[in-house]
Image (tube, rainbow, N blue to C red; front, side, top):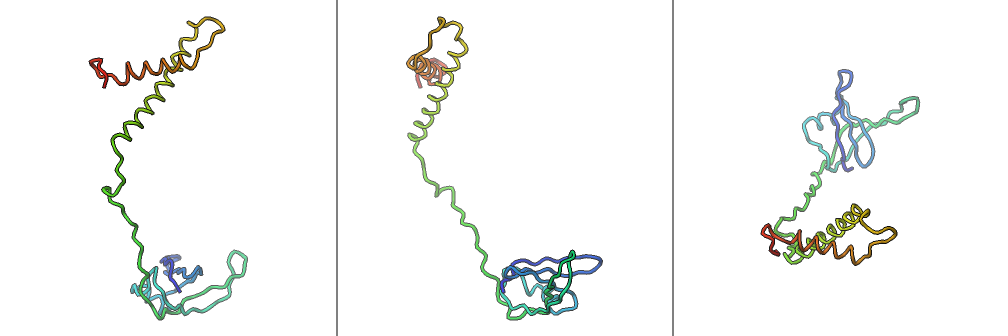
Length: 160
């Protein structure tokens, strides 16, 4: 059986182990050889072994249950190899050219300028003649003006 989980429990002044193996639950009390094997660290999670146990009929919360009490472990194998996560070094990441980033930055800037142009028109709508709308070309021209005359100018007013 593959030992999946081992828990040491202290309850009412007594110590025992709960063991989960192959999806089944077992208990192991201090009167058994299995308890000493667990205490000595001879059996650990991930190991394969044969579990010798007794079954005792009982009741838990008004329902009948079968308790599986470990007597001892035998044919104890080594722990299954632990899979370690593969770590990809930062140098292995795909390099993205500056040109790709520049194009992406330009698209983001244009979207932002377009949104600001729409806000600009909304804030100044009372200056429009009644019943007239604003064409798409007007919005795009305002966005281009924001982009070229503000975003892509350095502090001296020259194009970047």
